[in-house]
Length: 388
Image (cartoon, one colour):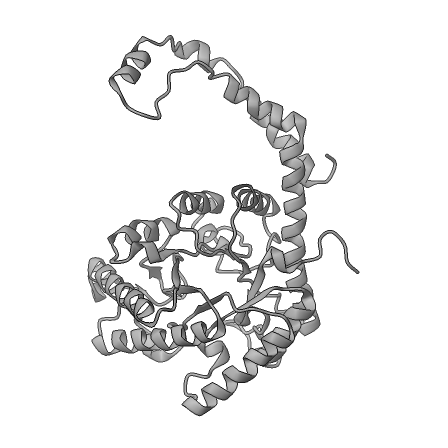
């Protein structure tokens, strides 16, 4: 049955092949679902109402496939996408599963591993471009350490920079038009991953040869694992013009990487995230990098996918109500109006210094005014609970 929370193509909801085809394997238990071929995963996403599917190279093409096998698989997959009206907006590369990457890929001490990782990424870029992807995500899942005795951390950063520069040049040479989106994570599967937060990557990007081609792909679970405020990371990336992609899921702080259905653990945090993305007019994919519970069969996986999209649209509607709520907006306006007449400090000049030094800014009087944030927060809760 269709309602106002039914996903449409303009919502740009996408899922990874690795999400809906996940077999429910974990470190303590074997797979609970049979393999789901990529074409069947695309059909499931089409039935659920998704717009796009994203993939690692080896989600689609086995690592040891021959060129002929690769071409046949890709041809069949393209037909499945067309038949189910699914696009491929993003591609990425698996540099973490194979044993060769046990001590990193781009940052490995072994130059042969670094060369193989760059070559594998180039092939994944070829695949993504053939499927129509314009965003290429790089997640350095093995780019880290269990002991810092193995290498100097600044050597790892230099190697990472060199690899990204090389791949940017490859994209330019091939005229792929890629935007690279770097994905941070604090730990797991390594004890410590070098680029632990979105902020780490925002610091690295200006040092690259082509910073205009490189942005970030923040993930809810990854920032939350470190106890950070995800909306703040997204906002900083947006302000820097570097929010090239985003991974939506959910996570309980302090736990392993849970990849819960979007909004399942912290609906309030999800609300402020959706509100931010909609308020600023983010135009990219709303990509769900999440996994269904291990308890589910594939019917349950389809419900999981529908749930991710439905929750986003429910929170989008709540954000619209929040923005239209006269009492909430009056409280916000009142706080802004209280500072009316203060000398501006957004631009330095001799005149602005003179105005600032001569202004009446009584700290004791200013500090006595209540800000009504308790009321504002309660009204937000009431919007979320559907009573406003």
